[in-house]
Amino acid sequence: MMINKFPKNFLWGGAVAANQVEGAYLEGGKGLTTVDLLPTGENRFPMMLGKVENYTPKENEFYPSHEAIDFYHRYKEDIALFAEMGFKSFRLSISWARIFPNGDDAEPNEAGLQFYDDVFDELNKYGIEPVVTLAHFDVPVHLVKEYGSWKNRKVVDFFEKYAKTVFTRYKDKVKYWLTFNEINMLLHLPYVGAGLIFKEGEDKQQVMYQAAHHQLVASALAVKAGHEIIPDAQIGCMLAAGMTYPYSCNPDDIQKAMDQDRESFFFIDVQSRGKYPGYAKRFFAENNIELEMEADDEALLSKYTVDYIGFSYYSSRATSTDPEVLKDKTGGNVFDSITNPYLEASEWGWTIDPKGFRITANQLYDRYQKPLFVVENGLGAIDQLDEDNEVKDDYRIAYLREHIKQMGEALKDGVEIIGYTSWGPIDIVSASTGEMKKRYGYIYVDRENEGKGTLNRSKKQSFDWYKQVIESNGENL
Ligand code: BG6
Image (cartoon, rainbow, N blue to C red; front, side, top):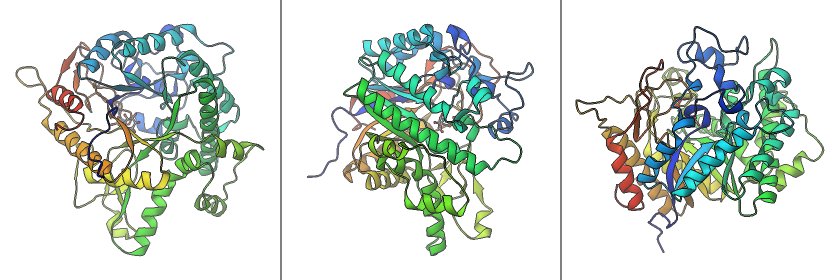
């Protein structure tokens, strides 16, 4: 029997992260988070690389997370628009510092808890299933200052307490959870992924893998607590996915591409298969990386594996061992990649590869044999308002159409996919650049890079298109 349709209860929707939408960065008792120290513009990158000199925002910089798109005050209007598109699910993250402003507080902050209660109630009003990420690129700054963030084992306990607090509070409202957004990003943007700032002379790899171990243990503890507190919970991991293609059939290229993919798979292998893979142990041994583990860590990792594999897919990657070929680098969600001569790229140099989406989904399903949830996919582009004040984003529709077609092909291949939440259904702040002009939405937000604009929302051409996709359960593209 051929499966060629999207399943009946397929979770169509959209995805955002707290720090990219909420704003109100100190309202309702929220504490400062790592991302609140990242300005837009050329100073963003040095900071992302972990060279933050001090821990307070500077007068002469613009910090996009401080107001973002003001979802904190406008969530009702935004959710009504999502409901109009027929969303079945909406992925958002909880800002840890709204719940525990310092990260290590004795008691949670009631105003923060209430805010998400209100958001979940609003979603529920329209029958939209919340899909909630516990950590999406924001760590309370106090934990960075006092403890060195995820370098420190104590942060695992603070995170476990935070996870238990939100599971208990929202147990009747939220069933789908994700632990760490794009957990493999830690190796590429350690400040963003884990609040890591390196000291002079510190062995970065050692620090990053130790922090990774702490996040993996914290993720397992969250799975444990989540299942104890919410019996029907579905708790997933989240990988920044996108297969690495070898540039040629030279075995050296094949090996290199495999090694590059394994840098990312390593995390999911632990979260889903429950143990450190052999290739990771070899890598640690050859690079003098020694992980400090507690006695029951390995048992925890093995017992509390995830229920599903959440992943983002924007582009595939490619690599080579030929120094000449390697000169031709391209952008793409901060992962190193060479230009693929068969493919086009977005305005930010991210390779556009719909077939790679099918290939990646198959690769993940072959490896893990667990349901997949596509929790991010989309095209960041510059949108222009036309003379009628509308955005005709046919390029975005084209990108999404081709990707959704390939998701359908993956379903035909027998890959189990439970949902698709496209990234930034409403324009939001870009995580990598802090820009507003890198837009993903079906809904336009009147806001510019340096904060000008009314924040008014309006529908783009893609709004009705996505509505029809959902209405027809992926038939009418
Ligand atoms: C993913 C992140 O890496 O890609 C999101 O989980 C991010 O937070 C998205 O926004 C798109 O990246 P960018 O840099 O275009 O916002």
